[in-house]
Amino acid sequence: RAAGALPLGRDVRQECRGLARAAVRLDAPAVEDQLSEAVERHGLTVAWQEVMVPTLHAVGRKWASSDDRYIEVEHLLSWHVSTVLRRAARPLTEPITAPGAVMLACVPGEQHTLPLEALNAGLARLGVPARMFGAAVPAEALTAAVRRLGPSAVVLWAQSRSTASTALARHLADTRWGVSGARRSPTVVLGGPGWAGRPVQGMPRPAGLHEALNLLTGARPGSPAVPPGR
Image (cartoon, rainbow, N blue to C red; front, top):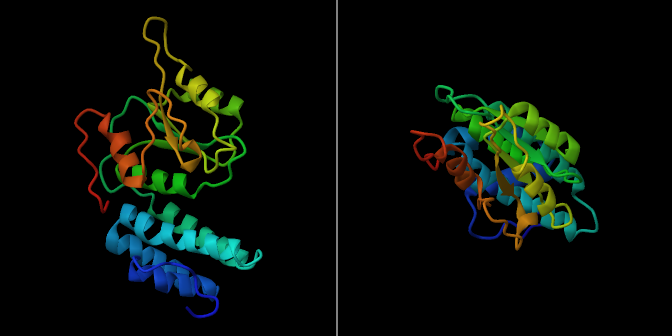
């Protein structure tokens, strides 16, 4: 492998290699063009799972093995992935009439937002209302938002075990809203590797973006399964 090349492995799409080369060169226009083309050609879920994620992981491995070099590559790539995901968050179908929006939030202390940005874009393209709260949301703010919004589901992202809090997840699942006699509570969905080995009854943990989209739309009456390339 050439000096400076990213450790992508053999079984990746060719687009990953071109994207990695552009990122290492800090060629921002090429990075954004290639990310946009991947979404256009393959759809959001495939572009995220098979192009963006492998390249982001390769940058992370390169950084970890290079004495903190290449961090500028990770920052540039992450910025443009976020930009393209937000641009992709446009409805492709009529909005779904739903009992409540889906809340997306990182747990307190968690800064990794890109997976939630991908989920937010995927929900938007399917016409599912969502509210994105981003990184490191305080527990009190999460509780207040659940009571104010009355969401159908809350997705909690934890990248590491140190940030995953089953106590917080249970608290949000028990948070209720509505008038007396018709009070409801949200489905809490656990996202991210931080929840591994911490199964919580009644709280699904989807394996990836496509599974998460199917889960969050499947509970809605009449909603079809999400096409893999959506």
